[in-house]
Length: 249
Image 1 (cartoon, rainbow, N blue to C red):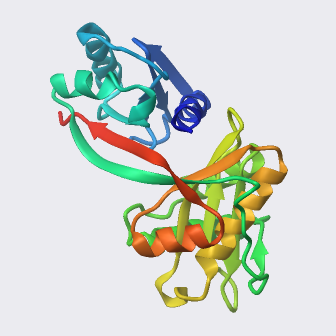
Image 2 (image 1 turned 60 degrees about the vertical axis):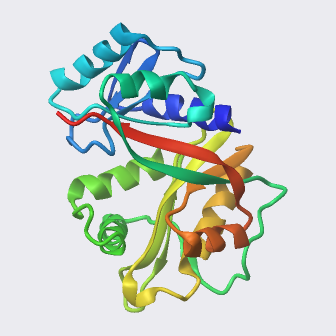
């Protein structure tokens, strides 16, 4: 499964507005932001970069005023981490990921109405709710709402539970499938609405939607034991790890 997840990472970055392929790496760039969480690189499965390859990768970031940063499944390219560490990269985090397949998907009872956004107000409300859910790590913005719309209109999916009286109580998104798998991300519930099953409902609905479109699997990363239990209840199972590594400049 690690190879599938890494092949997906490559295909997903190739969807960025600007793509640089250099030394066994793919760099995905969105000129609308300098965020290192959107502009980053990933290695091709099985890549074995040398010092010159890593130097060229660093140069591609610096030419654009961006922080050199990578996300990848290390088991799919085991020679990459040592090469990056030798060049001064340091690990930000290692996250476990979970995988859901048609055989494991277990939707919860349909007690919450999960909706597909259709208006600008819907996308704006979702972007604002996710900003609040993640403690303001990113500010809500027109660009964020536009990225959500592009996800839905580009073959992925965005789903949310509407708050009483309007707005968004919680939401998540799923990328368009690549190499028969899709990443589910951004699962967030506003603090006032937690503990009501919203995360499980949107996660299961998204996984069901993407699997119905022909994806062989849907995968996600989790941030703690509480969220892991939520995802496991709807059919996600352990799959492997993903490495986040960057170079301070």
